[in-house]
Image 1 (tube, one colour):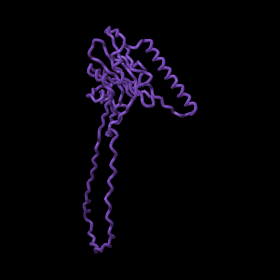
Image 2 (cartoon, helix red, strand yellow):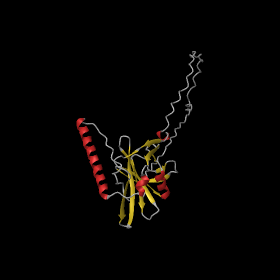
Image 3 (cartoon, rainbow, N blue to C red):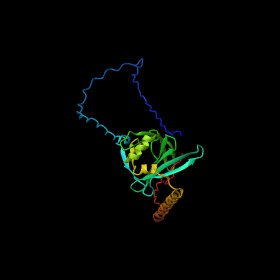
Image 4 (tube, helix red, strand yellow):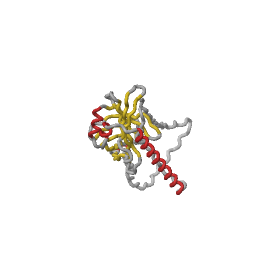
Length: 262
């Protein structure tokens, strides 16, 4: 999938001002006036020495030069790691993905992850759904605990978030299984590095385990839709109680068990 990049190009223009000073020539045939007796100029009061101009205050460091920001997320308690499998009709191969959502302290969806596994193919894929408002060109970097980061690229942005992905192999999968925290680093709109920390507990158990029953998955989807409907009702009630008030609602990063499919 092609990477969507936004490139901003700026140009600086410099203006040069200059001036010429010329003395007008004496007009011809003009009689010369007798030189006036020089007068002693009146004593000029001594001007106080001017204080040197104050140096302008140094601007604060740009926001992008601030230190990295770490955002610790927690796993969505309403959804455990979920493994979903299906058969790709084009290749007639089984494709499974293991997914989970991660939320803020206020239980607002922030990040979702899905790890794809095509049976018989050593190449895997990991896909993230990240918040809007991030710089796309730098891409992402992710690593389990203190392992060497793996780069990824943004693929597309939709109203509910931006999709980033990377091709991985079994060594990365094994690091996820052994790890405690997955660090996902991006750059925000002012160039400051932001690292989302996602707990990896029980990932290996779900990845190696049996896929979820389709009936159970359907029930999870129904519960998620019901929760969203209740949130919408609550938002409408708050707006009716306070006319004109704006109640922000953060769209979910992904439906449980339903990240973007390959």
